[in-house]
Each structure stands twice: as C-alpha cells, then as structure tokens.
Length: 375
Image (cartoon, rainbow, N blue to C red; front, side, top):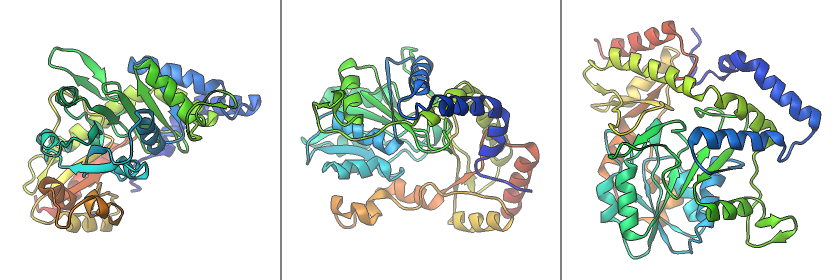
C-alpha cells in the first residue's frame, strides 16, 4: 500500500480539466507576469475571506517580510513570536534587523501562550506574530486586546490555517488572516490551498497599508519607474494564480475531507494510553493542515521508526525550538528554555492527512499504531 503525507497527484486528477484549461489560457495569452488570472484570483480570494485587500506575492516568507517592512519597523524593535513554529516566522524578523522575542505556546492547542505576552513585553516591543499552527486559530480576541492596550501591531502567520474560522465572544466570525493588522499566507504546494510552485499573499482591511504593501512588493513603485520606497520584487506568477483560482473553489470541500479523516483518527486513537490526539480550540474551527499527536514517555522517535518500517510516512513539526537553532543564538541568553516548547519538540508527530485519503490506508495506519502500543 502506497501512503503519502500529501497526495497532490490524486487531488490534481479530480480537477485536471479545470487546471489545465487555466494554464493553457495563460500560455495562449502569454501574460506570464500579472496576467488576468492574478487579478481574478485576488478578487475571488478577497470575496472568500470577506476582506478588502489581498495582495499576492511570491511566497509566504516574502509575505511576512513585506508585512514588517510596511509597518515601518526599525532595527532593534522587538517582535514577539512563538518559539514552536517554522523558521520563516522568526527568520524575516532577524533579516530586517529586528529582534525576535520567542515565547512559549499552549501545550494543547500549540498556539502562542497568552501569559507570555506580558512576561516578555518591553518598551521596545512593537508587534506580535501569532501563528495559527497546524490549522486552527490562536486566541485572537485576547491577542488583539493585549495589542491594543500596548499599541502593538498584529501580523498573523496564517500559512497553515487558510479557511479556518475564528469566533469572537460577541458571536462575530472572521477568517484567520483577516483579524490582525496584516495577515500572511503561503501557497506552497502542500498547503491546504496550494499552487504548483511557490506563492503567497498578504491580507488587510487597511487601505493605506494595502497601498504600501503593493508598492513594496513591486520595487517600491505605485507608478512604473517612480519608486517611493525601497521595496522588493515579489509577485505571484500568473500560472500559479490560474491553479489557485481553480483550487479556491474546492477549499471548503478540502477542509471537510481533512476533518473527516481527523475525526476518524480521533475515534480510533483517543483511547490509546501513551498518546494524545489534537485538541480543538473552542473558538476556532480546525482545517487540519497537520494531524499532530503527542507521544508520551519518550516513545515518539521509536514510534516514527516503527511506522517507517511499515511504510507509513510521518513528520515531526518541529524537532528543535527556534531559540536552539544556531541562526538564532544571538537573540537569546545561554540556557534559555521554554518548558512547553521543549516538551512538544520531543513529543509531536504528524500523521498523513489530506483531501484524498482512503479508508484502507486509514485503517492500516491506525492498526499499526495500536500494534506499537500493544492495544
């Protein structure tokens, strides 16, 4: 049995005619840069998210960098971000001469630990980057309250939670990525909304910020050859936009399929002593970019090795805290540790979950996990 973490080929087969037609249209009109499909996808995505501005760019890392450039952050300014996340979140902070201040995460939802915001706040703190890890939202209402109180910007890293809904205490529902000052996302092929190469986008309801973001992403120009600010060259290819335009129509269907698989895992794995299935945040839907277990008693690596021997793929997101990465040692004191991050890095393991999963593969994975734990 061939099992993959993400089955993009089978997904493509179902939408092949639509995708091929969109790509062929790009080839026929030869508008490879800023062609019609880019604007069409942008407008479709704005409508889906219920947001005023989507600015496509080259990738999710660029989106984060451009967001920080647009907020006029200065070298030495401190940006709070979780230590348990992909490197890009903190990487762009360092690249811009800013200081990443890494905080812990909640051990159940994996999202930024709210108590640490106050703990690591200093007069130099200028922004917070909550990461909607694995597919559900951080507690944005409380983050926004804290940010407003201390006059901080909020930049959402929404690379893993496209399509997730966050519900405020007053009943208002918003899509992740549309809640802070700027949202950033990635269209890397394995993402829930992925293209067939690299791609990303910035999201905002602020007209002024949107204008500045567009300029920065286009060499700092609003009018060709007239450059108002220092920018960069970060564009979403028309071919990728054509793919995304098709796949966006199926995004909610893809999320439902991932949830169905996650629920099946839950049903069959929840009773096993030694593992903890993912917890759903009460105020957020989950789109399960990853289905991530916690394995107790130091058996995570042993389980991963066993699954590999049974031809079952798995991934560890993430095996090392950002503050222990050599690239970030300059930002932390020696011996710095965050207890939950340390624990999660030794316990988490992600199982295959995607839109094309089948019952036989699911049962096989569950059987082997139970066999490992002798249950």
